[in-house]
Length: 445
Image 1 (cartoon, helix red, strand yellow):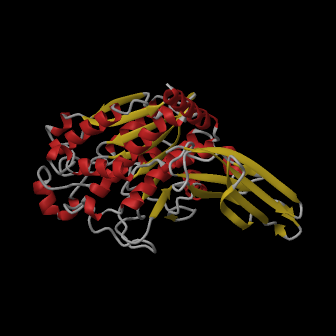
Image 2: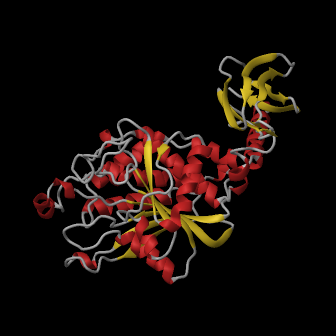
């Protein structure tokens, strides 16, 4: 009975801590929960969709992929709804013009339903770079695993959906989020046109006067042998959305290399469909374009071939791209405006609650050092961050140095300590005064 009471008390501590934590800390915790293992599992499953090793449109592998995406989203219990949005490729050859295609649309309902954000990725693939004669003759049977293009994007959709909709994370977006696996982004010998699924989605949204606040398209986000790099593609009116991407990369310490504003214009993926209907949209892709070399990129030799397999991927990059998508989407839908203004150059000292709490064996502690204007510019602060036991004995010194204004985070590892309650104390001082704050945390083994 005593054990049960203790467990319930600890669960209450966890619930209260998560419910009361600030939005930045909540997003950071969710970002850290992105699973590379989950991403790899989804990519491998899509690579061999239904055992066919192809997701080319109008093939059994493509049908299997649509079913897998729908069922996977359906099994994420926190989603408000999961729907198969049906359309047809009217210009396709007979009988394919009468075969339904499906966008899979998962929704997380926000408190304000007057507008929504979209995170999208196409699930079909191509082997067109195997040569036109081979592709035209063998498109229904050719091996086209499409691991990078674009199982990486779809796998990221699954992780974002899983984490943002999990009620245990206490994330309630202000604006509704739609996570869309688009069909028929690629073109093929049996039909004309491309981006058909996203064009259908954007057209229907426009016809229904829906307010899409912004759309992010993930397409080929996993190939790079040497760098964790991503490119942002944008039109003129969507530059602000690209800025949110680079801000999230910085704010949540993802350490991705990116291009900078003004972002280049290109129409080679689903983001362009939203531009056609005057919606703000950007593309995240491993290089713009992926068939060219860049400062941090060697041209991808595998996409649109039978060699676009899991073994060619940089899974650290894929994980960071899922984290970038999640953090940007959560910040936008959650209206992280105060953090964007104040967290980068904070105006006050803050010692945040650690996360996770309780922890075993490691936890992270975040704190603000504010901007204090002097005649010589920003003033550095002497910062001490120490850990104590319940008797006041010092356990560890985590920080003992001067810090300039900014948001900082440090990890504490309690693997050598016994379970119990501990305290961490931040002291910061300069010629203008002294700041001290103490927080309690629980190590539970």
